[in-house]
Length: 261
Image 1 (cartoon, helix red, strand yellow):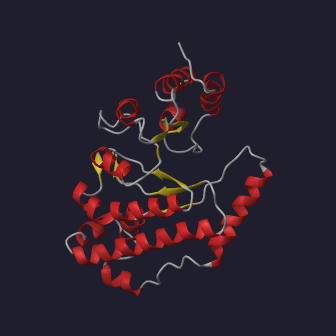
Image 2: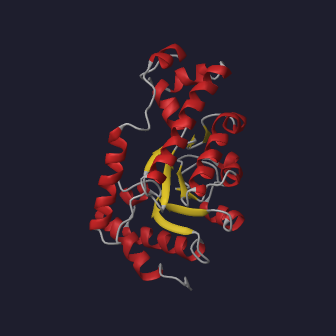
């Protein structure tokens, strides 16, 4: 509920983020060494926050909501975050990354967006566009992890250049924010990553997981543009037998060309 920062004045006194902090490059290089050890079995994408999630978390939702009444202050905070994210894209390109970057930036919750679509279009999406352009100019793809119901700005996310989106949560309240419907409408414009619910992976029986995974592969994978994963992560509550049911179903049906009767 609360955050480290109470207001804009607190924010102004806080040390700015430094993209050239040596720990960042060190962490990147450690990741790439682990990737080399995996001999092609694992790819580790460099990742960092976007604009929205670290901003509201730093202030807490209540303080952040109050700040929205002071547009100049909010703009400054988002611009600082955006500039930092763009600089981080530049750094990973300089360090030799040639695959993708992962931006984690939750825009919504189960019932909608944290801010109005207009606020996202004003404060967040212009910077997401610059992140995508910088990455694409350096030969990188952009993956956006954004939990919650992003339906109202989904087309905006595509337009600014995001290449892939995770996870299209299957547990939101909006029936239109549905990976199967979105694939039909936007399947040639963006790659979908997801979306076997981690709640189901924790609570349901393996047969349910097998059937849902098979449905994803049958309806979302044909033609490309789909990466199977959980609807968030593999957390400690996930049952091993359910994870294996998802994995084994992928092994059985997930090789291209997809052809599931």
